[in-house]
Length: 164
Image (tube, rainbow, N blue to C red; front, side, top):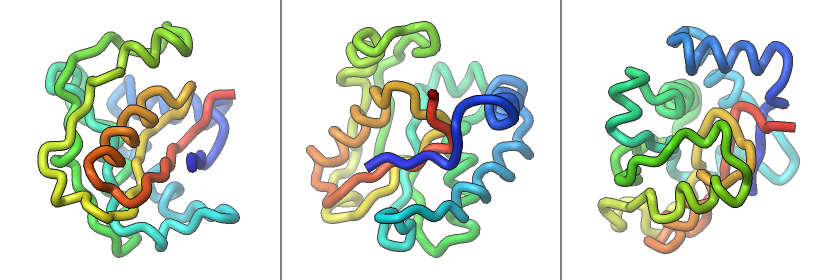
């Protein structure tokens, strides 16, 4: 299951770009609060037991200076009593940015890029995977595949925006 707070267009697109590419962390904090308040039929954040932000490779983290998914997830857990784990799911393979890739290239670009460092920390947990933008779903699908393979009970995805 994947849900997005809004569409990746107009004001939300501009806000995400200011946050992600121009380092306007305050935008991320505000948008993380919007994510915490998100309501949808068949999706209740309170039903989950762990929040995991999509990890960045250490090289990309150094380039950007922050992980936008961690900032969003931190704001969610400030509001909701659900723990966050940003250490168990790791991106251990550096991949090219997905922005100019098609669906098939995105899938092969992230295939095998993630690993779970301690399966006991996710065993039987109901996990919400947090990311900023859902385009083709390749990244979050690969993360979810690794989490499920390593014992998660269920994995749902919550993003700030979905590309239209």
